[in-house]
Length: 415
Image 1 (cartoon, rainbow, N blue to C red):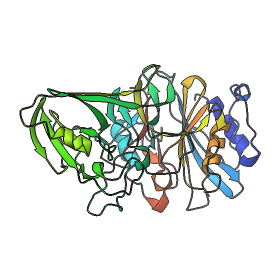
Image 2: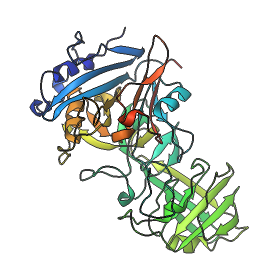
Image 3: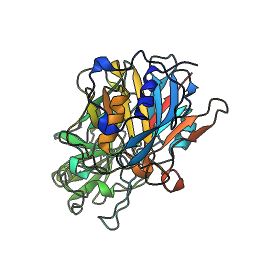
Image 4: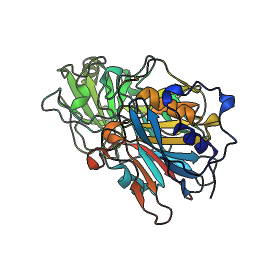
């Protein structure tokens, strides 16, 4: 069985509290350590597939013990690949284990925060779609909602709704920031795209919805503002249907239902709505869009995430009070190692971790970068039993059942 050097670090955590873990330079990472026999509170390591390791361990904290479930992935191993865990549409949701089995994954974890409830706008349905960007197989699926429209935790200064974690076309794991770049070319000029398959559009903008969006209503996209998720829905709205490059209809009401593969929907609010009213049936338009990742290799897959560890150091201002079930991604030196980590909490004997403690655990594992994903009842880690071939949830689920989520990270091997 292939050994995973970094997993030796978890044995140390069983003997010391997180408060006592000092900052550690990169040179001190346990690159040459070897796994020890399991100690009290730690499980014997498993190998769901060559290049993929799994184990559990307990972290003592000032508020009790937290059970941690860890998958470590060596991205250099032939056949091992990290991808977007995806239910088939941006507004679709499914349990992690179900999506993992469907995609042939040996391990999978939940992903980004998402639009799960809609209590602030009566009569408007929740879309189920994630807050951040999504890329699958190098193809942009959606862009980020405005900063004030995000769901989830209160992020530290400098965090952006455009922040992501993923793997580039060079095979390296990394974090980044994805910016929507798009436009609509019309006979009268160009319109900038302000949104793409997202549950909230910037004020005054035009957004694009494609067949990847799914069947959810687009009504929520014109509610709230860039700074307030609870602000009223816009009264200045217009939607245009484009089929094979030609405008075929317009409406004062956002629609719902599946979008055909040869069809694109342009939805505008305020100034964006006014501009779309000029696009009468028969008008020819050309729509182009992409997610710009800046310098470096483009992302092959990516999803929204929030940095808590950078350069081996936890970011300042992380919450150190509230312990909850958590999900996180760690990245090793050079981007060759990827860590998927989930903690138990709220129920049973595990207390969960604070966000600061989560960053400390990722640092102790030798991660250069650490990113926080959706937590609470969304936290789910499914791993294949190599002996039986069965993919099953390994962490303790809140309320005893899997929550349906819109995305995550899938690890496949041998294909």
